[in-house]
Length: 320
Ligand code: GLP
Image (tube, rainbow, N blue to C red):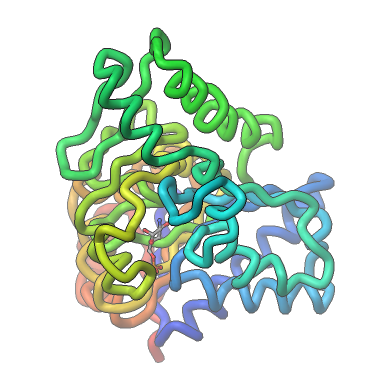
């Protein structure tokens, strides 16, 4: 299918256009089966969409009790002396989802899941990696790495992470029948979830990620953590390959930091340098991918209409 790119006026307009698309797809899915499976992202980009989706659900436009959700990613290493404290930390993605979406629903989703990153003790994890160098490899050409734990891992802790945290989450998605619609944002370096630039696409299911400096810098710049030392160093994240298995993907991007990754992902080749570019491959294979961006994030697109068309990308300019 062609990739659809909709350039909107601003954040509110982007959120409204996206909410309309997501609501329509949910209604369609509900006609075909009992439960819709929604993939969700954190970050400032989808907050307006979530408010509008909650409003639509509460107005009866779709039945939120017939939705199960899976989030893209979660930090490891949030401050807290146990898992409970880390889940409740205001920067955890679980906390974020409750605050920005789940609590706004009059009828709650039947089930919500966020990758189980808070169950991992960062210091123990780091020391197991150090003590068992033969148990894992670090993959990726950039500063952000995917830590791949070998099936033969001798460390019980690392084997547990592989089995319960990574494969466990992937299996939950599979037993829900896969994701009907995945909402994604874009990191400053073009990452999706925490699939950082340079991490290979092949086999990118549920990843254990050592975060890129750029991601940590942005987390501090956006006021999430006071210093780079306070920021988690690792995360659990769906990889691009798994993200782009959803039956529909809606990508949101707003603001100046997104301009370069958005245009590179559409105008250049598909490359792990910009992980969201993998969406073009997905669309080519029949996936339904829609970018909904604001005028600032999409600033390079209206002037590149022909170039985009030549790549099979349809542009709708709603800047008015
Ligand atoms: C984090 C999340 C991503 C999100 C990105 C952008 O890195 N792991 O899933 O897309 O932030 O966030 P924002 O929308 O706040 O720019």
